Length: 241
Image 1 (tube, rainbow, N blue to C red):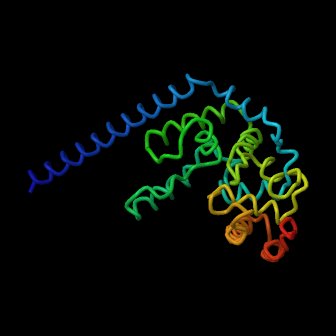
Image 2: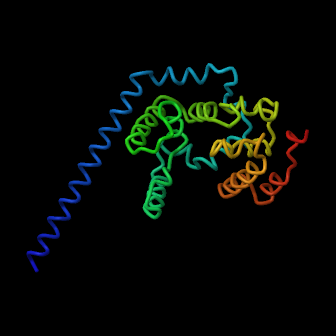
């Protein structure tokens, strides 16, 4: 019995050591990918590329409803976490284990911006680790408001529209600051799957996605149930003609 217990303890320690070494090696590879990406073009240059767009929109010119909607549906702890939301990562890991495959990444807005700046959409673990290093760089170098601006000015909204300024003008013929609650919450849901939710082609799908956004806003305390229902029932005036 003692020999069996000793064997099990030794085996467990070996497994832990292998897992630790493998994890350390992956982090090292991810760090290398991060350094190679930033060596090709620096973070400040990437940021300047976004800010130089004609349709770049500052956070001051975005409706509060739009900002709240994006935070609610994409990253509810955005303004309080350090770029990585460990609660979301833990939840995503649990879901991945339950599904037996990679189904959820737990990415924050900062991580999504990091991915948009440097990496592809391919779901590779080393790329996810590299993304974390870029996210930490972003959090050290820019304020939360600046990171949010960069994110919404770089994401894809379908129909060739990159950034909230381009999307608002393209879909509604409106400057972002003029969007109402309906338009703000509709566009907040589109980047989740722009090929499926582009309002010009799939308004019914976009509005179903919008309902998910409204439920998240209600859960986060941005809307009461009555307010969420009112927005959901608002006629899509921008598409009336």
